[in-house]
Image (cartoon, rainbow, N blue to C red; front, top):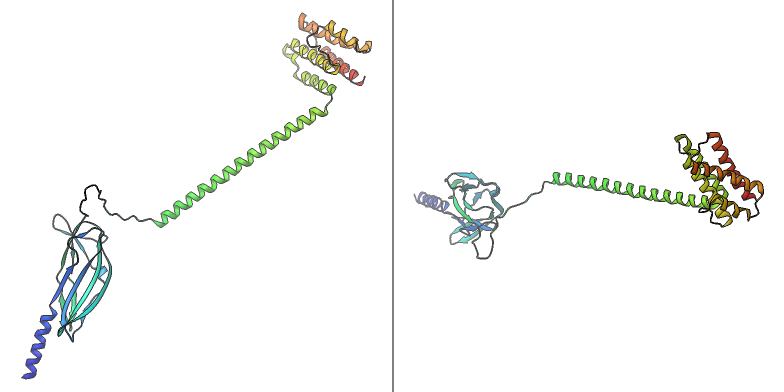
Length: 313
């Protein structure tokens, strides 16, 4: 009988103590983005143990909206850590579970009741309402909603590759342009130098004969431009003699030109050839005479011979 009474007292104490659980929050209301603590306290007999899940971060936390209905608040309610401890309290033990949490949105959240076991008996804590508010308005200070920004790594890598390709192609194009410009200016410089060397190496007579050859290639007489041909031929011949004898024959008449050339001790045959070419050029220039192609070519050859004979002399 005495044993039965002792067992009954222990059973009653176990039941009473097993149900002494309390769930509380460190801040009410909490602020958005500000950490707070959720505490579960269970008073049990000294020789008893509490069995409870430590996976608090997987608990279904609900958000109570304005209509009073609940919706899951997965990314709004975050459990950052969980720990447990025990304290001796007289003939009993106080088991304490502590969770650190943070909320990322304002409103009322429902932290669910948690099942636990004491001496193979199942009990349940009460649920907990947690209110979260935005930071109180301070005059002169703006309020901003806390938002998290996530980067899509795959998209970021893709963008980096595209930017790298654009940069690579841009550098290649720039190098091609620079190389092209360098080649262009080098070729241009070589051509100018070549022309300068050629013009320096060619004698005065060679340049004059080359000018007659280029004039003849134009075949101006075939387009009824006899006058243009002989104006140019006369100019070439006078320019040559002016440079060779250091005279100014470009503004002289044919007669004045011949008088000045005779003073340079040229042969009579050479003077006659020069006179023949210049007189026919004057006929075309001033009298607008027309000549057949063979006669024009013959006059060109006589002009070349006059230049060559003067150079030899």
